[in-house]
Image (tube, rainbow, N blue to C red; front, side, top):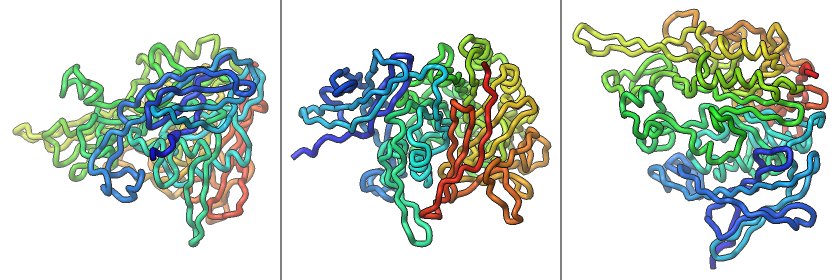
Length: 551
């Protein structure tokens, strides 16, 4: 007997317009037919278009099926067959929510349907909305608890803004769909997770939250949406870590298959249907949602270890064992998409900030992955192209390859932020450092990093220094605090106290998880924390600030 068909995900909503929205879901069978039923008594039906993901694989580090340890089933990357289904629901009435349900029919004509959820088009101006601000899930331990508490605390949200780093290895299918530890990306955001957290011998299971079945999600690219040179390494982790700049790939391999030999965002772009710009496609774009103009940038670079000992491709130097083999160089923390003044993305941003849609918006918000201001480690080194220095002996043999990152050349600080200040952006939202902290510029532009959803790598504040500094002294690498001089703001309601009883201007914890909600009706951004060590603990609103509304 053939087992009944199953959905790989519940449906989720994408790309709302004033009178339509897309419904997307995944299966592990191509099927005969896939459709959405919607409206009164689910009487209206529309067929979905089906495509196949091209690069989803599993490997020795996957936790999928019965593989619970490295290499039990997979000894190398193996392609996994996954189909994506998308239907456009049209003729919708503004501010009116209607029921919908998906059905997939397998090749043997057996069918499977989802529960009934609700959808709506883009809200009209002056509609009060609750928007979840999140990032850096990366299959981390507290994500399911975090999202479960979102739903329990604020109910249904109207949209999700996701500031990058959705999964950990983007081509590893199970991280998106069905990691057997129970905390994959879609299950957590759809209330179908089953992730256990243990404290003092007591296990608590969290399901995540039923969120994106009802609310559209807008995402941006972080460093964990990017895969490296395709199929040249023995594991997906190695392939992920094997990115090199396009310019280096051009010199090494020529014009043909340039993307295959540098880096790609294929799986990310195949999974999501997003607003697009003519210049950047899905990678950077702007959209209007209710009273908000959301501008999404592609601002992320390759994360590398500090060390370059042995075969490590480091932030500050090439592997000691590969100095005469440029094909094995990492080229430092190279930037994936230019954003410096004069670049295509920069010019697009200038145009967007001068557009009627942007100027008339009540709230002007920019989302990117890389932090402009943070106490986190990942703001060092500066967001600029690595300056390569090659040291050779008298015979021409390479003795060292090292990289400097001049702080004054940080493209976000030097080029992007002056544009945003001049355009009177009220909020810049970002992730990357796995903590919560916020700042405000002298002009009143707010900066919020609310990425402590699953684990944290600490905050460089007070006596605590950053761990990723180069082995030489330089004013370009600031050991503590925000490198660009802003003072972190202490939470306004219930800050956590340090060991001396003083309020801390950040949360960097592997036990406390944080989420933030933007309420467009009041213009307030509220942040909440939940301590997973306290089984019956309450969710605490610990910070709130208000955005200036433009009429």
